[in-house]
Image 1 (cartoon, each protein chain N blue to C red):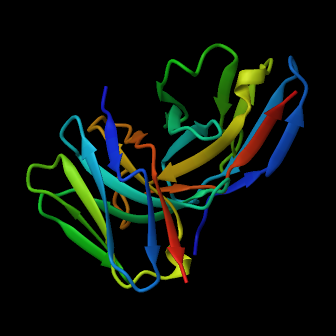
Image 2 (tube, rainbow over the protein chains, first blue to last red):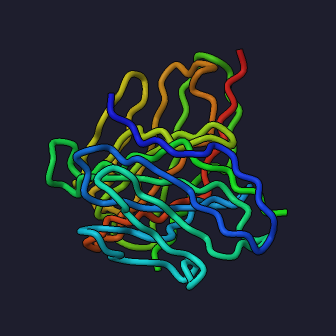
Length: 117
Length: 112
């Protein structure tokens, strides 16, 4: 069964360093997302990506964040200069937006736990 | 912005018992998603409901979206320890990007 994959599963970085979180969405999906979940809190939307551009972003997604789809399969989230408060679980998700048989079902990856020290 | 309220926040049941988790939205639901999460892990897609009155089942889990499309319930029949985890409801607010807003989750413990 197709699934969303994410690497690494856990990333530890020092404050101020750049990190890149990687995702491989389900292959025929068109919409890609990043969400995050700070420990003990809600899952929060960060950004959606469609047709090779950001379609919507939340207020959390400031200039320190960027996303890219460098090739036909990968989808990355970059945090330019990490802060302590960026420590969270980051989830990638994908959807076919209703164009496929699955409707608008949105599937999540297993997450990358980012720890900023 | 859309807010989702889940109840109860946590639930402890004996194996074999039935249970219901509710999700109430502050706005009309265009798509309501149920996910299961093990602590510290990813979200496993369970079901998605779109039409008022719609009901879907998967194994022993049934989810329903009410007619007015502002509330959904998740019902588990004859619960098992494997059902334990955090159940999250997520709502699509009707925009073209299908971004989801989530509730805080319901922690389910099933005692053998």
